[in-house]
Length: 465
Image (tube, rainbow, N blue to C red; front, side):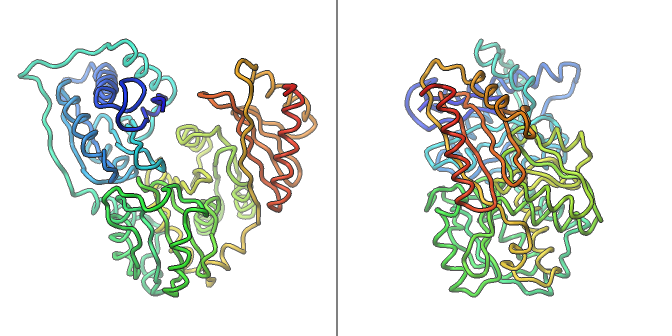
């Protein structure tokens, strides 16, 4: 498995050879590059720099965390270690601690053999492309110098941020704790044996929700594929029905993606987590702007326009969504993978915020979970990829697809997205292998899949495969 290096961090499988997997030396190298970037970025600051770190419950997390912490200390940087935590918790902790940056040790929805370093700036937000490239260049050239013994950083632990994070969520103006308590909800939680099993039950207890725990032991032994998709969630679907729960809640290992299950065991739909939260927020604010990425459901646009707001699409990637949200003064946004970004809290995907907003909506809308889902426009997605011959000019293929459909609305900020009256297709090339990803959405699953196959045939004809 190749080591994947990107502007947002480094990701790979544990073990193996240096540079081919996420080995201890690779963790030290990349932490050194990040720390060196921080020191250069803050070279006019006399005080010792500070970095907040936290990890999900992966088996390798403690090892990688120790390597990262001691590398930063070796550069003369103080470390505040939150221990078992979540991505959004580290994000809010960075500005709360007045830290200069943050590192989350998590491979998000990837299986347990994976781990990663996700990098944050002083605002607790992911780095943009320019800053990320600087770190990649530093790592490529081993361009770092470590501190002398009297200048080593200091390591401290801080376990207070579970309470601080929950306090901040419950203090949000649109989180209606009283209504949720009055509703006396019963929910089932699948936290895939990671840190969601610590943080989400603590939030639900504060909101007066009866929580039935499924896979909530933070031991890193994922009982199923940790990506919160329908095909991985049979156990919680059955348990929601058996427990006669109002809904099911599913989070990924680092708790920045939220999926929901209806009371009858059917999927609320990962794409509709953001739609439901936006519907609630826009309804309370009587309008406002929203943003999601180009591969997210059209349902968010529909709901936004229903409330008199404006919708904008960004390139794929959380940092791109956040940039677009700031540019358009968005009140809520995120990604169709269950990632809710609520600026009143912070500019990062946060399942705790998502849970609090969703339950507030469910408590005040006089509908069941299934009825709420059915109140939104129904769209269906298909996700495919087409394997290309190495050496083909993928950019040229995408350009020809855009030209072929120029009579439709075509967006080229991230690959090619073609909006038809009742459906769309989004084509993106991979940066690591010769494939084109083909995402489609239509008014039925059959139509979405038919559009995907039609598009794949068009690409094959252009590429002469």
